[in-house]
Every structure is written in structure tokens, then in C-alpha cells.
Image (cartoon, rainbow, N blue to C red; front, side, top):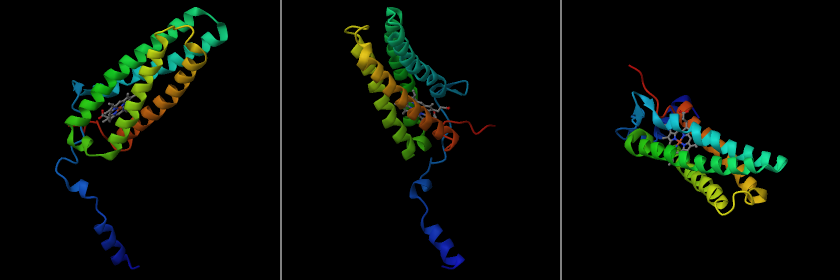
Length: 171
Ligand code: HEM
């Protein structure tokens, strides 16, 4: 195939979504003085999800009631802060046209909603008996949630660092 033909073929393969007005509008709108709220709020559920697994592990090793209580608090606050992070991300997705248009953001949304439901399950399951819930299902749920939060956070990071979504274009 000649270079000319290759060039023509490349031109034919332009993604029509890129032609839609508003495609390049990707700056964060949900923030305080230009600081994006979603990026600020995601650290809390991520850290607390890890804390829940840590507390479960320490309960398993030591048998100390304190760690089972710490685990239910970590699981509950991971869920509540996760909801808060979800609201800020969802608002960003709905309000910014260039973000809303990209399929990768909808993938992130689906993984995140699954994560939020599992964070809620990990907390709700413990409400009936926070100490007996830890072994074995509480710790298994916490381990699964750590894997999910890594996937969600990694994917969210790719939205920012690879696709440059939710960033500022500067002055
Ligand atoms: C309804 C659910 C969610 C939606 C619609 C959503 C949407 C988004 C969007 C659009 C971005 C790109 C940056 C921006 O525009 O702010 C992003 C980034 C990100 N998301 Fe989410 N998100 C959701 C929930 C979550 C949750 C629950 C987590 C983790 C606990 C998470 C972790 C991240 C991370 C780590 C980034 C990269 C932030 C940065 O480094 O600046 N997201 N998300």
C-alpha cells in the first residue's frame, strides 16, 4: 500500500465523536478555587479500604476485640467517604461535556459503582455482629475491596494522566 493510500485510509478512520462540539472541554468544574473536589476526596475511601483490611488482619493475628471495632469503623467510613467521592465524580461527569462523552469515564463509573456497593456490603455485613463478622467473610470482603479500590483508583488516575480529564488548561 502506497503512503498516499495509507494517509487516505487514516483520514477515513477519524472518530466522529471527536467532531462533536464540546469534545475538547475537559476542565474540572467541581472544585474549590480551581482545586478539583473528586481528586481531593478519593484519597479517603482508598486509604480507609486499606485500613479495614489491616484491622481485620490484626484481629485475625491478635484476637483483640479492638481491631474488630476498628475494622467496622474503617469499613463504614470507607463507604461513606466513597459515596461523597462518587457524588463529586458523578457531578463532574454530568456537567463537563468532554468528560461525559468519553467511554473511558463510563467504564470508571461502572467500576466505581461496583466498588461502592461492595464497600457498603462490607459495612452492612458487620452491623449484625462486628466481632463475629471478621472471620472469614469480613476479611475476605476487605481483601476483595482492596483489589477493587486499586483497580478503580488506577483507572481514575489514567483518566487524568493519560486522557488529561479534569485538569486545568492553565492561563
Ligand atoms: C460515581 C462514581 C464516580 C465517577 C462518575 C467518577 C468520575 C471520575 C472522573 C470524571 C475522573 C477524571 C478527573 C475528574 O474529572 O475529576 C475521575 C478520576 C479519579 N477517580 Fe473517579 N469517579 C467515581 C468514583 C470514584 C471512586 C469511588 C474512586 C475511588 C475510591 C475514584 C477514584 C478516582 C481517582 C483516583 C481519580 C484520579 C484523580 C486524580 O489523580 O486527580 N472515583 N473519576
